[in-house]
Image 1 (cartoon, rainbow, N blue to C red):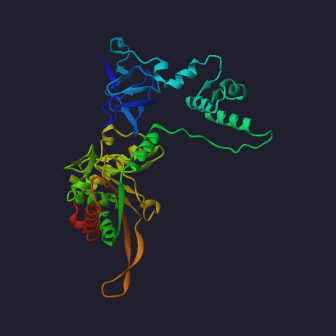
Image 2 (tube, one colour):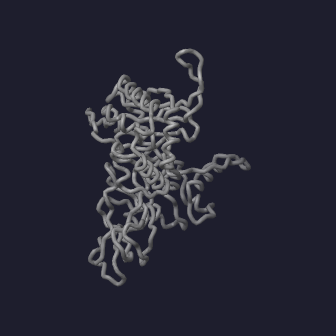
Image 3 (cartoon, helix red, strand yellow):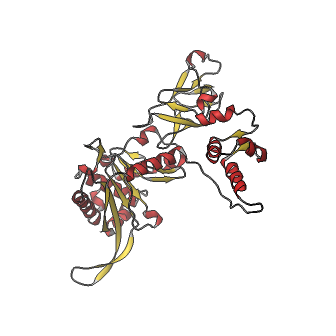
Length: 388
């Protein structure tokens, strides 16, 4: 019996994706759960997994096709099985491409293929594509060809053109740009606090004798989740003049990847022990950076942690990740000389934390109390208090 490969639910608020690449070809064997294609969504690049063991009998859509949830993209079965009855009409090449790509294919008089970005740029500059085609030595006209030709027309003979590269935004990078632009429209404010991290470092040293993958980030995730239970207005979404308070913490962890900043989610993190948190963090970071995130990794989080301490950044102000109402920026732990109550001083390891919050949902006092409670938990931490 053949099995259709359908586009699964990819996470909240994600209704479509682009099939960026096939990892398997027709006729190749696949195992259930094996990645057979890559999907690019507005949030991340995801792996499309095979729903069954067998052979890819038919690929129904080409790379570059925009897909919707539930759409069939391939058929898997045994060699020789009849798959025709299960096939749905696949988009034609023109349907699979964006409108400007379709126009490029319709330009018959030009021998070379033209990238969509090059066509758009040529139109912006008012340059006939035939002129570029005449001077291009490549088989495909690119945006660089257009820019180079435009520069040559505007420069006097013999003038040197500075080298450059034009990088089109990926779907993820474009969405990040849109979300950050939307974030800037929110009335947000930031509150910072410097906290003594001696106890945090000591606890990490002790706990790593029991589990090597206990990092400062893992400890902070645990402490933040527990503190948020006392401050539900920060574990929330702002939506249509209402505040949605969540009973459990779905913590978004900002991860830098070659495709841009992604924030996969650790669900119900307040219920996890340290080892479980550490294993989950390692897994989602690995999937985020390899482009194999699962749809469940992108469910909407309720609070975000962004840690730049590993890059030596002492303090920074993060931007909100809407519809969340708060995000925590974590700097590097640095040595400071602190004054003692009775006079004199001593060296201490200090940690700067900054919370950015949505002023429509919370005020400065609420954020200050959250940071105060979090700081108290960090500065008085004992290893035996935390379930490993």
